[in-house]
Length: 233
Image 1 (tube, one colour):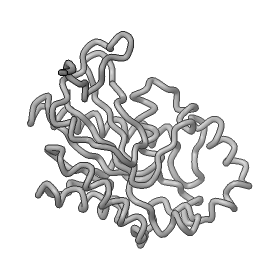
Image 2: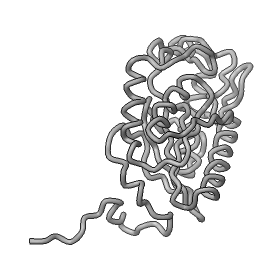
Image 3: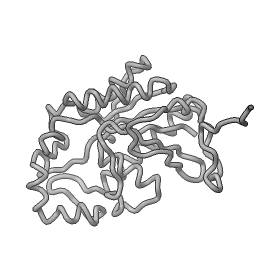
Image 4: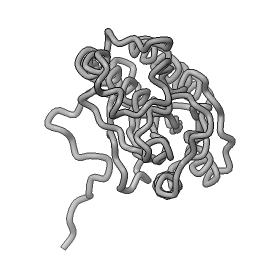
């Protein structure tokens, strides 16, 4: 099966300001965010990527471009990986939103959360999961079961995709943390997804060059992708 690498954009100017930027224009990576994007690009430099796909928003495109340049790939835009439409919440300080009645719904029962003038978290998850699975199937058909690709998106989008892959109800997705510039990995098998990693910001990813297809689960946990050979004296 193909391997999906989910990357959250690097830290943005709105993240630093504590603003829920949503889909607002003019939100770019700050200096730390640019460093995070470069760090992620360096981690992925040894991986033979077949595609880099991104949310259309600038902070994701900037992160995706850093990754794609190492592989001489274009950045493909996917509208269904766009940030949640937060409606009337967009552009407001998070500390102010925390006092809204809807805040507790977002935290404790996300499946019931509908942002005023925007979309529901359930609709957000439905469109993003559908886009990810569609792109994954297309890239596997084009490049084979060893294909590895990157999707650059937003925190809530990535959390919702991971929740789906983990078989978690949307109401539990706030248990997941996805930091700026982090890497998470999913491989969609024939019978179930395999969540290989979540929210990583360091470590060698070159083992993805030889990752095999998803099969039966390893009882006992298995030896991992970098199992050492027999010791020699």
